Every structure is written in structure tokens, then in C-alpha cells.
Image (tube, rainbow, N blue to C red; front, top):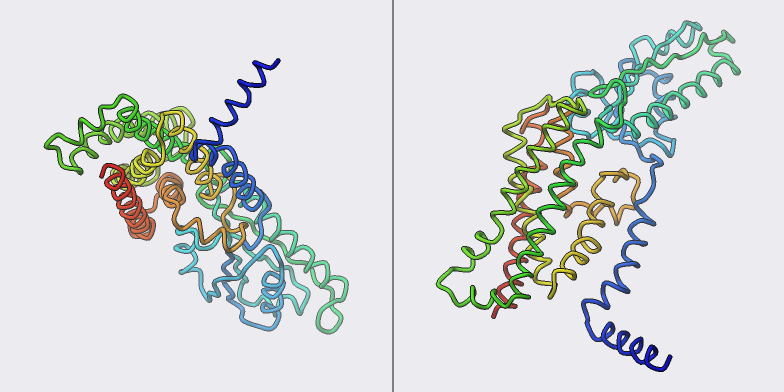
Amino acid sequence: MRRVRYLMWKEVIELMRDERTRSLVFIAPVLQLTLLGYAATTDVHNIPLAIVDQDRTAASRELVQRFDGSSYFTVRYWLTSTDRMDPLLERGDAWIAITIPANYGADIARGAPVTVQAVADGSDANSSTLSLGYASSLVAEYAQELVRKGTAGGAQSAGITPEIRVWFNPELESRLFFVPGVLALVLLVITTTLSSMAIVREKEQGTLEQLNVTPLARWELIVGKLMPYAVIGFIDVCLVLAIAVLWFQVPLRGSVTLLFLLTMLYVVNTLAIGLLVSTLSSTQQQAMMTAMLFFLMPMVYLSGFVFPIENMPVAIQQVTYVIPLRYYLEIVRGIFLKGVGLDVLWPQAVALTGTGVGLLTLAVLRSSKRSG
């Protein structure tokens, strides 16, 4: 037992001596728990809502107040016609749009039946189902209240009926939401882990120093090392794309050319993350663990791949703006399910360009510093 205790103590000393290993052992679990504690919820709150009030009476405003006063909805857009409703749903600025018809107030007052239309963005099946459920429940409760108290002159209301419409995914199939997201996730994991491990492998074999003394410029070395993994990533994209469309029957309504062009921007981001991870690691095992625990898993939690960003605390939502996966998920789901073009996706393209430049600059600076 004395020899076993000696080996155990020796292993603990070796473990604590390495700063990177200490980070993996102590910081990573706290980071994962903190992120999951705030981000891991499938409940939907603060649903971005657009109101199309074609009546503009006290009665219609009372119904709008019910939505605005609910913890489930946040009224972000007040419209007077349905013309502006389509772009809001296409961009994802509103998850659901409620249309109050003209003569709503007059019909309520005389006890006539009223139909209120609810149009939902069905690209996220889970959120859409919950959003429509909350909206229908709220309208039903309000209608029951009108029936109980009666309307003007004591007339009984015939009730308010919600007319449900779902765009982009009428059957609310969850696979149409998740399968395009898997494309983004596969590309992230493959390009980030392989590129980071490839550079660290050169360190372990002692060949990186030899490459540094060759006439190769810094950018030539980086491009030469990372480009093969970009090609591998694009091959994987083609495979996943074919399986998604042909096997899982996910509709590809937008431009394939635009998808590949914006994928190039995303790959720049993922390869930059791989390069950054390589500057933080000494071994391939460290590179893989660092990539998974400090980059890939937090990005998945905070990107909207599983948990709605709108449900996260405001401080966490601000962090998501620097996560490339967030923007690429919006791109692939927009092109697949909504068929939107660059006129809608340009903010995501600009954001990917910004994060790519920032990550690549940081990675190159750290790489140059370590080489020097």
C-alpha cells in the first residue's frame, strides 16, 4: 500500500503542476455548470410578438394589453397592416404575429363571433408549439372573461376564436429544426478539433520548430496547415447536406450557392478557433479536451441549437453575440426552411465576418508570440 500511496501522491503532484490540466479539472466543471444552469431551459418566455391591429379601438387595445402584460410575450412590433409582418417572421425578429381584424370592437360589443389570427414561425417546432399554445390559452381566457361579465349593454359575447397558421414548417416537425443545425455542429466539431490537434501534433513531434525556421511566411504556414481541414469540412457539409435533403426530406428552399459562400465564412471562424486552441495546448489530448470543454460545448449551449436564446438572462444573451455558431444556425435554418436570401441574412454574414476577423487575429497574435 505504501508504494500505491506514493504513486498516487506523485500523480497528484504531476496533475497540480500543469496549469492547463488544473484548468481542465477545476475551471471546466464550474463553467459547464454555470452555463447550463442559466441556459438549459426549454420553457419559453419573452416571446417576441408582432401585433397587427386593424381595428385600433379600445377593445383591441385591451386584448393587446393581455399579451403585453403576460410573462410569456413581449410586444416588439405594433403594425397596422400585414405587409410588414412577413419580413419580421422571415428574419426571426418576431416568433408569432397576432392579427386583430377590423370591426373587432364592434363585433365584440354586439356579441358576434370574432376570429383572431395567430401566425407563427414554425422553423423552431418546439418554440412555435409553446408560443401558439400560450397565445391560444391567453385568447381563450380573455374570451371566457368577456362571456362572464358580458359586453356593452349586457350582451353575451359569442367568443373569440384563434385562427392558427404556421409558416415554414406547417406540421411542426422537430427534425426540420434540428437536422440543419446538425450540419453546423458537425462542421464546427470536425474543423475545430482536427485543426487544433494537427498543429499540436507538430509540437509533440518537434517538427513545428523546423517549420518556423523555413522561408515560409507565418500566413503561409497557417494556411498550409489549416486548408486541408477546410476541404474536409466542405466534404462533410456535402455529405450532411445530401443526407438531410434526400434521406430526412428536409426542404432546401433557398440558394445552395449562398449556403456554401456563407459556409466559407463560418469555416474561417471554426479554423480560427482550432488555431487558438492549439496555442493553449501542449498535447493532442489537451487540445481535444480544451476544445470540447471551453469552446465547443459552451458554444452549443449558447448558440440556440437546443435552448432558446431569448429565455437566457440578459448578460448571457450578450455573450451569445460573439459565438459564430449562433449566426450560422440562423443562416442554415433560414436558407433551408424559409428560403431567404442575402437581403435577410446580411446581418448574420457581417457578424460572421467580424467574429472571424477577431478570432483569426487573436489566434495569429498568440501563435506569433509563442513562436517568438
